[in-house]
Image 1 (cartoon, helix red, strand yellow):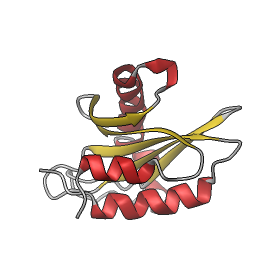
Image 2 (cartoon, rainbow, N blue to C red; image 1 turned 180 degrees about the vertical axis):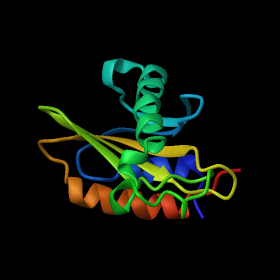
Image 3 (cartoon, rainbow, N blue to C red; image 1 turned 90 degrees about the vertical axis):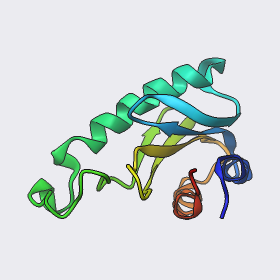
Image 4 (tube, rainbow, N blue to C red; image 1 turned 180 degrees about the horizontal axis):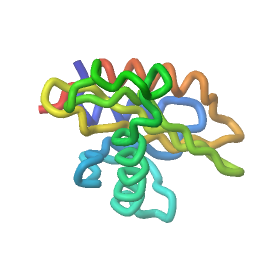
Amino acid sequence: MPGIDECLLEAMTLPGARGASVVDWTSGLALGTVGDAPGDDHETTAAEAAELARLAAENRSFAPKGGSDWSEWSDQETPIEDLIISNRDSYHVLRFVRTAFDSSVFLHLWLARSDGNLALARIRLGEMAGRLVLV
């Protein structure tokens, strides 16, 4: 089972990958980074992405079943699978990682829009999130 470094290197094999990171969304800290970052600053990117992740994860409006049944989700996991932010030249895919302890980690992939494949990236990030081992 891959750790952070192996997971990030695998993410960079995706077509169009510009950069990737594993981020703790409660603290906003990057636990690992690879490749480029928007504005050439991985830490700022991690902190800003964590704000978006926190907002989505803590908002009941994004819960399954129209937000009416939050009870099936524990305090230690979010019902959100991923977030996708698109702009003119790229996609940012934030994939939440479920862990045994607090599920406060996500994978962030920065993907070039011109040669990236958003559907493939979502599928592969989901697989990576399922295999990622955090110690």
